[in-house]
Length: 267
Image (cartoon, rainbow, N blue to C red; front, side):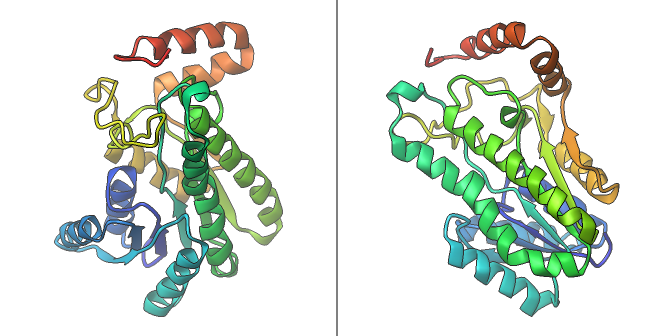
């Protein structure tokens, strides 16, 4: 990945920031995006101090034109685009019957259409370079999670998009990776939307025992280098996928029981 130009959406915190660090440490030139300029600037200062070549570009993945400007900025500053990591995402926690439809729209706009827009405008350069399109999906995109209907739907949609795209691009030598982390210690749960669209504010799960963002990013970097198709992460995530495939009825009961034990569970 030395000297490769890598765009990371939602790159100012969590897995996105960790990806910027690991790709940058291997010599990639990084452009991160996000909506919060202060967070972007803080990340650039931190990673630049580590000797990483990194730029920040304020953009909202939900806005198609912002994604076009993002791709143009990368080309103007670095000359090309080799890798796009569709990382920007938002979660939720609420019963569907109680959830405002606008919450579902918000999640789909970020997690699915954000990836569609970014990929659309970065793809010509990526195809030219036989580079990579990466989607940071979730185990929730393989196994639906109660209380996360909108989040699961967005990740199922992302997985289908990436799978179809992989087949379209395979004759052109372009790589597509679907990365599905399990529970990872980031701020995604504190920022998760509740039934009325407000932020949850605190995590309902024990964060200490989870995979770290840095560990997750290291696996994704290695999978990119090896040009893998799909990456399933964490032991619990792999177990969930296995159980869902071979014992779906039992998986329903186990998943429900695990999620129902969360503090202040909505069901």
